[in-house]
Picture 1 (tube, rainbow, N blue to C red):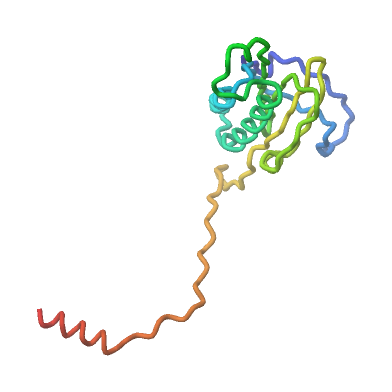
Picture 2 (picture 1 turned 90 degrees about the vertical axis):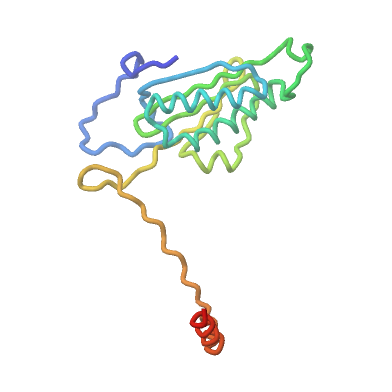
Length: 200
């Protein structure tokens, strides 16, 4: 389900008369523009279903540039939740499904990025793989009365704009010039090739 900013209740911000906004810190509360969430069974299929949901939502929100990074983050968080609370076996027996855990994936659209949240019933803080934290600007977790919520914030890339407001093209760096000298030319071989071509 997706909610727009008008449908969200936001906390009123105090007015302080300052002309320069305060720098953004970890205690700042971002104002969501939209929220989408999905509840999944904690099985191996949760990763692929969660990524389809993520791609669809980012396309709807016009944030496709975050797709690859958000997929890497979401797959890491959901995979960890399945391993800790669910049934990681791709072909489980019916007995293993009697107390099947649920995972909730929530995406929060911000002005300059997206927050990816995964809630599960595990009660310990997560491990943070470098592959996840290297893609995020902020990340954390908190406990709930039924488990925990793990979240990561991804910021949209900043582009340098042209005078018309379009993103500037980033030109690839020139290839390194090979410092090795060129092989010596075999003049006698070239003369024989030319003579052979003339004889045709």
